[in-house]
Image (cartoon, rainbow, N blue to C red; front, side, top):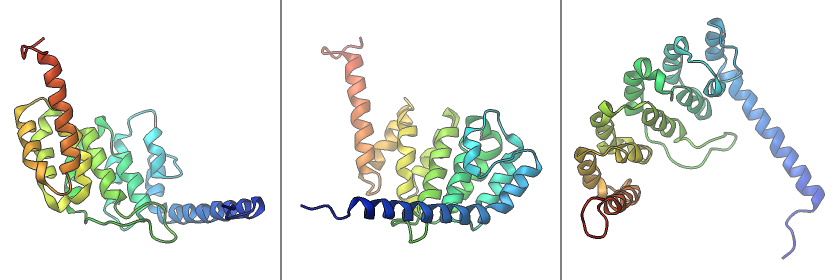
Length: 211
């Protein structure tokens, strides 16, 4: 089968794609400018909220600003970056309660990225689930299970399953067992339950006695 493009055509297409992506990113930065202005005003000179993920020191003073801007009508890629910046263990004290609330109220969107956009519409809610998982402490287990059991949180719940599965408690195991027939979660739950049972069997050994 012949190539769809000649080398010159492929090079031209890649260059066009690069320019289009740069234009989209520039549009995102302009949309994000109110957030960036507030962050710069308190000493965080970043090009985008995504940059905070690599910030070396905790940025507690930025957390309230990030939370407030997460509720704004930014493009999905921008809101994903804000949600990602909140996913730090040290941010839990300030970010946990408002982030859980925003996540619970976030609509479930699906489908591929729209023309002229980067990232699927579901990515902000998905990233919120990831950040919640990263911040969660053992004492948050019941609250995380509550989010997991709420079908209104849609497919993003898949990203919380492994956090619950890492708990060795009977409560977590029973919650996962209840969710084993959930249409959004059953495949992921089956995987983690199989893994947990395999680890338990290995600990018990072939005789069934704990090794």
